Length: 509
Image (cartoon, rainbow, N blue to C red; front, top):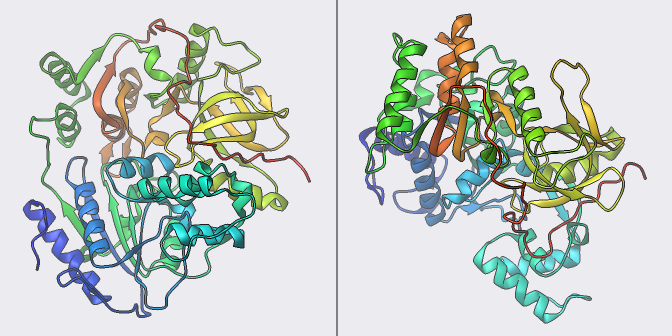
């Protein structure tokens, strides 16, 4: 088997060889960079599991490069050109926009599962532009588009191969070139799914309908999806279908955040002993902070991670209070979390429009300003490829001790949002932030309760997930105090793409 371009550990090399053998059996030969047409047959599923730092993403990225080198076409979900019977395709997917954006930042062309399940329907005239951008057609002449606009689109696409982004650079809105969305009718080929620990049974069934070959990359130490009895999708696979990466790959200097996460695997470790480890790490390394209070400045872009809903609600209201937020309105820069879409079946197209732009349950959003119409909000969707949009919004602000939330913005239907200054650790799965604040008193409460999940103390699973959301700095907050903000909330750091797309979701037609 060909040696990979980079140095793998023994377990990574073994996994690479096993995956290469499976791909060769379905006509994708990474050894000789040759392809044969796909054949119908049963679904091949292989899971690659390992804890944070075990090299799953490194292996995934190397596989994508090798598949592209062999001539396999990447499907992004933005636009699909002319289909050939003999083509071989891959799609790199994640359950959320934030998880997909983490991969894109590492050079992996990832999109969300939803963007593959539903494909855009392009206006035929603008489809000519998309074909030209992708190198499959001649430069078109389109009424209303100047040569300068087409040049801007081409320049954008050459730098970033995104058709919607290129159209936005040309001054077009989504409604100009996308006429609707449809459920994918034809299967694809090879699917690489990151953060597979977040998959539920329905998503897994959908993926198996589309991809004859599936590679699942997941962390068995994370929290299982709600409603699945502590089991993850890959837990149900035969043992021979699971490849485990055991070795931890660190940066040149040891990573204290990963060290703490892996220490939680010790069955004899108590909560008190673990906190002593955190405090000791904070004295040795500036990447771990022993926090005596919650830093309010971080909450606008990186939510405090908690276990209990009551804690989440108290922190959100403290955040709004310290910023002087009014009772009946949001301040520009306040963070939100999408809690789903409340749209009837007759507005299915609008639902698909919003979901395709990133407004799916769990999406992180920053409020920019009121929309042009009553009940609408202008929003920035964190991690989305085209982040800025306007949508009918139902924003709920929960209050301590009150059963019903206060609703400062209430369209009759549209996207539903909760405040995002603090989120539960369950909702944080799949996301990463440069700096993360973990509210330790909540984890202590979980430890005192003595609850277990999948044979492990719940507090350890919660701590593991929370800690591994931090890319650079971990704040372990031990006191229920809040700092004062260093300044007002801001939105100037959210740079919009040229001519951002707008999806004005009306309430009725």
